[in-house]
Image (cartoon, rainbow, N blue to C red; front, top):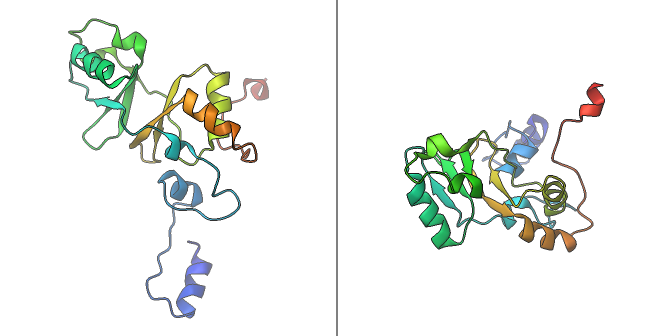
Length: 176
């Protein structure tokens, strides 16, 4: 919370006051509770699937593909020991040589999205960019889940009032 608000709360007798320096978006990205007129809008973090298949860099592709198929997924997320996203395995990568290490087959540096982004905005983005799924991560890169386009389009249809844009994309026309 802001220093002024913290000082005011302390002056009112609150003794467990903490200044949160990272900011509101970081708070929301961590999936922490929010208040206000937009707090009831469905968000990517809430809508994301937590049962996605995860794997490590040294895992064998054939093993990961089999786990993904058994779980009904056509995507797997590559994470480290702390669940930080390192890459993504979409169906194209999952169909590669089963003896490859994930590290050699994965799509490194995949785009991720924050939990606070509205499902309406995610639906628009996923349709525009032809994405069937998108990893949702906290601001420090930890996997929250994977958002499916089918889920977000369905949820967005009920949330037309939630239109504030939170995904920032580069505009090539602005550089011209």
